Length: 499
Image (cartoon, rainbow, N blue to C red):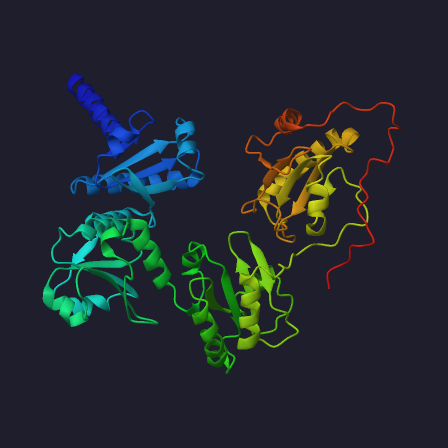
């Protein structure tokens, strides 16, 4: 019995040790840099213990860590509840956030979240970012992907090789990179080294870097490649939208019915205009049937195709072409010129101005935003919400209570809400709304909006207003309790409804 007891105890201890042992490194703010920065490659997960997605990832992450340990690829994690300040300072906004680090520089992990997928992705990441290109594989290599970038050099020690390699490491998930030091390869391509050349499966098939190679830095090379990676005009969809969004350029949409027998004719009609303004705007055509909701979001009110819209992605401003007119190359060219000359007014979507404001919270619409939210005499606290947003629905009773709390001083403090999917912000507003709910506070006498990122309890919201309000919050007891004189007039003759 004694030996049996000892055996069972030892087994239990072994099992406990196995459960506690992990090949995933636990990092904190104090040791993060010393562990991560020296590594050529390390994967780091930023997580919260309560996060369901993090819990689902955990066993796969552990399994991958054990497998990749043999390849000298480390996996680590940071508990963002214990290290809240560190995670916030590193821009962690959701969980899990997974990043690939190379010598302290990170890129977002875009691979699968199952063990075998993590193993495969990180194994590829460990391979050289730049492939050797020689006379035997050159023809195959330059056509191996939509975008292939080849540096032609006399040797791997050339001055521009280091910047090229750094660019390749940074964009190994985006493009295929090669280095050719064989003179016969350069001769076959008609290139005089040193040079960097982009080979494409669309538009101009071969383009050489047009500036002095010796002074080319990573940001110069990557910006050049990114411009070339976007066709003169191409179909846009879920798989490539991000490439357009990250370019920083306005997006010009041609909405088409893909079953239209004149589909190709419409695309070819617009292509010379797209080519003329390449580098200033990105032109795309989009499936108007599949993405009808997107058409409406861009203020195209009728299902009439073709239709044309320019969108300023940075400011989220929309410039739809009048759907009462035919879309022609001449009309689009004129519209683009006006846009680039800043002579085109954006079309702002707005719900009708409410006839009455009888709720504790002011119902703000796009047509009134500047008048109400930028009123110098008032402190204004706005909730930007979406009707379908669950978080917004949960906040509503609290936000209504906030409006009721400050109702006695509504002549000085406006608690407002705006349905952000139905109302556009005017160009004068210095921010855009990208998530819901978004809470913004504008102190009286200022046009600067403060972000509210705190707890959404009534007590904390009240405290935030009291801390940031410039107007007095003392109730004027001399005014009748049921006075309506402080309710803002919301209907003016110069306003009109949308057509």
